[in-house]
Image (cartoon, rainbow, N blue to C red; front, side):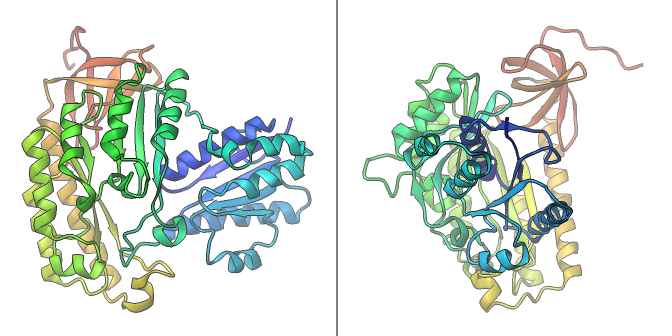
Length: 438
């Protein structure tokens, strides 16, 4: 039997794409392998949001090039956000790659799979077009990512995503709910609805639908116990969506809302489309409806022209809002973006590093404060995986929890929190006696 291995870099959208591709390859008779050493077909699903991710893809391609030069070696396909305007350059650099596929364009890889293993054209035809659209990947645990809107229309100056993933395109409501029901029938208990700006869902559809429409539909899927969503965009986050999160039992009170900067001048240069005041108004609305909601955000430091004063405004915002989680990154130019073409990367590398350390310190302190408040509380945890007699899961707010116990995966359990760090919580199943420290 032919074998394949998919190596995935980047975001949850890429993970979902890899699972869909894997399901399609298995329908063609391929079998997955744990490593690429024994695979007949190797697929690298790439990310170009950060240079580090591209460098890792180049390194893996270098290894595969050596194997091909030594004779034999697998067929190789490259998919994802690195494939696009730079493909001609990549073809010259890596001529041994057999297929290139842009995000969501699976056909070149499926055709390679047919050619490589003499699969019948009839089998391929069954997976063309609508066939792959209705091919769903299965995760290994009780949680799954479900893309609901592809692409992005925001065109922030620093971001490559709209250039690689295209304009916003929502999936029909029926298609999304069909996939959720399929996942539920195969043991999934929690779904995360994905989009680069997930609240934009439905704006391009002929039917009258928004993200809250999907929430309402999933409430009626019995086996699903939790619904999450990311990533949020302040201007698209309507009161109706916030109210749906507050009112619907399955939707987790967990928001990932990138702010990127606390300076209005910087937000304007970034072309983010909102002000600090508008961002904080949305946060206030969330907290007025859900005082215990967990809020995460993203921040970029060192964007072109960022002054000490503008960075100080970011620090002030983070201290005001008191996010549970702060994801921070230093700016790096992405070829093809407006910032790379028009704006000088003028913040010194050492200044970027210093600012990044400040944000990371703020995150650690804020996360520690929020997690310390969990001590002694009983929280609902969805058990996701088990290892060496301990189980790991997450609260409704997304906090990682480790607790003693086995045979809990896929279940909602009550856990008493005994220990807290900025990064995770530890506890015991409710009803069990806490062991005294020796």
